[in-house]
Amino acid sequence: MALPGDSTVASRRPKPAPRAGDGEAGAPVTRQVTHQVRTEEDLLAVRHAVRAATVEVGFGIVDQTRVVTAASELARNAYVHGGGGSLTIEQVRGPAGRGLRLVVKDDGPGIADLDTALTDGFTTGAGLGHGLGGARRLMDEFTVHTGAGQGTVVVATRWTVR
Image 1: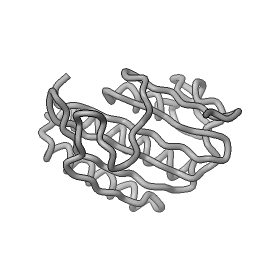
Image 2 (image 1 turned 30 degrees about the vertical axis):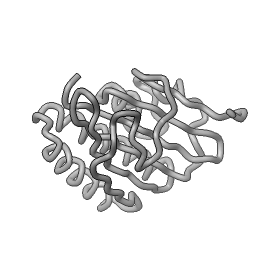
Image 3 (image 1 turned 180 degrees about the horizontal axis):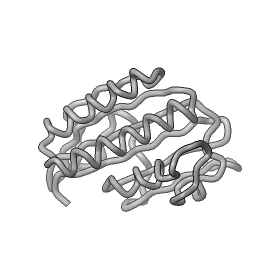
Image 4 (image 1 turned 90 degrees about the horizontal axis):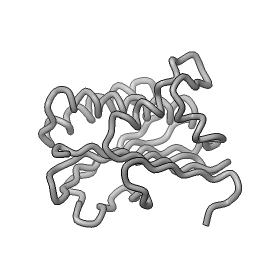
């Protein structure tokens, strides 16, 4: 049940986002690793871990770059706007191939206006305003769960076969 101020936006597939460790129907999680995002050094460690996972899953260089860029943007948002959090990397297997699901969580204030936050050019800081919306475009599936005072969870998946 949604409370006033709660927001959820889904792209590609409008269904509830899985929690870390849950596979979507027919897409079991084959490997899962969680990284804390509390320092600048953690942001670098996350980038390296995601890059290694994209190679292991079998993404080409262009898709590796897309996933690493999305992970970097989402982890930075959790760090800067959410006061820190975690990024879980899940290797998943679906009917059409393998994929990588990123689950980024924070316990921050939540996103007050999710539709605006997903708009290109919108920024609450010194950035270019491509973070959340840009990450959504780089992934095949993208869901945001957020609510005032409840933090934010972003679930983003990219598949090797589309």
